[in-house]
Structure formats: structure tokens, C-alpha cells
Image (cartoon, rainbow over all chains, first blue to last red; front, side):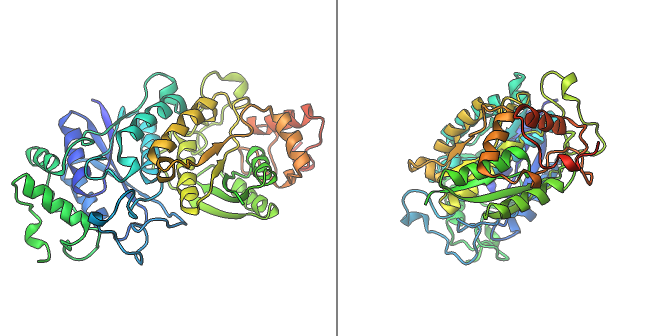
Length: 222
Length: 222
């Protein structure tokens, strides 16, 4: 059976990716990162989703002694995506590369063939590390800089959602039975999703366009 | 003043690299990793060297919940390099990529222009992540996958020792005034260097070929 490491944040995209990896026949093992994000809600969600998917998970705790992102700094204001151009303040320097390098280490030590990441360049076009070119370039690094790569059996990085719209992802996930009621998208760490932040808005728009009902909508602050 | 992040392990190569970065006019900030290596001696050395170079340092604590390297597993036997071909068991999967991705995150958040790493493909030809090709491939990842890269001011990864022999490194370091008496090379974590492991042997050979006296030689177990 082929084995895969799945990066799981507890959000909609990574949860869909996990269920997709399973459907493609991979035995998946999840990596969850506790890296000083604004709140722990998404970590709790990630654990629940791994359990729902009957997959093992590991939590990697990282303490970055620097800031440089509104996603790491509770005091800094979150951006309103409608009003920004370029790279949003929620960009965490080299975050996906950090996550992927851990996943690569894990994959090599477990003899897993693939890493799945739910990166998406449609909704997150502002993030350099969510774009196809980044993943393309990374292939070469893996080929040249890892044991399995040099030996001719590079760990593959798979980004099945890279070109999908949010509504496309949601339709796919609903078909796969992703328990969206367990996911957490909101940038705030309140009891219920705020319904106001960019992430909540993207999610609402995605469900609307997919003509589906978000199972968490009953809980969203009105 | 140009700023640089220097990866500092406490060994001979990274210490020389730090002093070289300073000589090249960079304001250097060190990153030291506590990643579950066999012993903490090299971390103590790294701190002393950063202080001797009058540089700030940050220690990043990483707990890898997997093994896959004799450098992480005290129970596993260390290799005798004379008897091995290919990649030695001391290879830690994706280790340098993990270190460099943290350094990249740090560099971007501090607006540093460069990262220095003491990788060397002469003595460590068995390690895929010590070879030029790896660093070459990484350039493209930084260009495509980071904020500064996309904006046209990529963080540079500098490997000034990549093609040097151990004796060449030592001669360079002696000229730069590197306090080699503070460095730690031995794979074992004893009170004194064992004088027996690959790393001790490489070091002794380097000093011999450079016709210089190792300031720690008085302490090496005879």
C-alpha cells in the first residue's frame, strides 16, 4: 500500500485533501503544526478530522522567535482581502517550506512515497508559497537534496487542489464525505466562527457558489 | 549594513563560516538548533562561539517524532566512514532543508539579505544536502516561493566552504581568529573529544594537513 504524509491544518482545504489522499488509495499519516498561530481552534479541529478519517497524526510544535505576520501576532490587525493588493499581512515567511521540510523528513524516515498539501492558488493567489511554480521548483530540491531523491525515488509533493475554486473544493469534499462540521476556517479563535473575517467570507462564498449548505452555518455568529 | 543569518552548529565549519560572514561585512545573527542530536555539547559550543563573535543568537528547539538517523538515535551505532559507500547512517532526513527553511523565515522577517551555511561537499560528499546542486536548486524555490523572492530581492544562500578541504577551512579560520578551542566536533558527548569517531578523525587529519596545532588537542583522549 502506498503511504503518504498529509499536512493537516484543520481547515476546509487540508481536510478535503486528506480524504482525497485516502480515496486515491494512500495510507495517510497526518502532520499538524502548532506554530504559534493566533488560536488553537484549528489544531483541535485537525485532530478531530484525523480521527474521523481513521488516520494517525503527529503534532509538531514550533516556536518561531520572530514575528513578521499578522497570523502570528494577536495584536496586529487582520487584513480585509478586498482592500489589498499583493501579498497579504497574513503571509508567514517561508511557512509552507518549513511545513514541507518536516513532512519530507517524516516521509523519508517512514518510506512514504508522497506528501499531500491543500495549497490553492485561486483563492490564495497572494501567497507565493501557494503557487504552482513554488511546488515545481521544490521538486528539484527534493531530487538533489534528499537520500531518496538521489537514489531515484523522490518523495512526490501532490497539490490536488492547486487550481480548484473554493466551490469546486467543497463539491469534491462533500462527495468524499469530509466532515465539514468539524473544520475550522475562521481567523479569530472565538467560540463560533466570526462570519466577518476573510477566511469566513471565502468559505461562505464557496458554499453559496456550490449551492450547498455549510454544516457549521448554524453556529456562525449572525 | 548588510545583514545575514548564520547557521551555527558549534563545529569547526559553521564557526569558520560565522567569522567569514563577519569579515565580509555582514551583521550576523546566529541560529542554533536543538533538534535531538545525540548530545548537547555542540549547542553549548555554539553559544560560546556566538558570544565570542559578539553576535546575537536564537536557539530553535525541534522535536522530530521520528528517527531515521544514527545521529538522532543514541542506541544506534555510528558508522566508520572508511568502510561505507553511499549515504552514511548519520544522514538526517531533510535536516538542512529544515534548518534553511527556518533561516529563510528568520531572514525574511528581519530583512536580512543572506543566509550563511558551512556546508561542504568535499568531506561530506555522502550527504545530498551538502552538495552544490542542492543549494542551486534551492535558489529557485526562494525566488518562486517567498515574498522577498517574488518581489525581486531573494534572500541569498551562501556556502563559502562548499569546495574547501578541511585543512583549507582550518587555515582560513586560523587567519580569521576563529576560537577553535571552543568548537566541538566529536559525535560522542563525552567530557573530552573521543579522538576515535569519524568526526574527530576528520578534524585531526585537517589540522595535520594544515600543519597547525588543534587548540583542543591537549584535551583529546589519548
